[in-house]
Length: 139
Image (cartoon, rainbow, N blue to C red):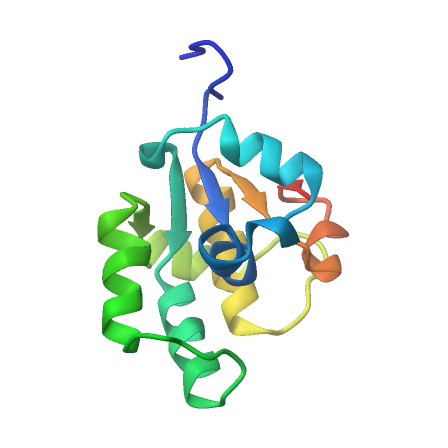
């Protein structure tokens, strides 16, 4: 359903891109920023594993918050309207059987499998994912 500058399909954010779109949008590439700007909140999603990755980054001190992790998640998910695409049996199976060669990181495998099963474009700066020919990426 094309409407003005809106895209047909949903965008899936890799965990770092989700963080950046909310906290540091200037870190997005011009192409990613333009694509995200042309969507409505209900056309944006994260894989549920990104919530776990976010929690791990907070626990390990890789990101610092001005509010509690719960408050940040409340804003980053519920107040922005971003969809959370949950791990389904089909996505779990796909993550273990990705075609071709893909690295072993389980979170990346689940995010890529989510994009493939849900037929979304994946916003990522991760070169390992960008170089994987079996998922559509934007950066």
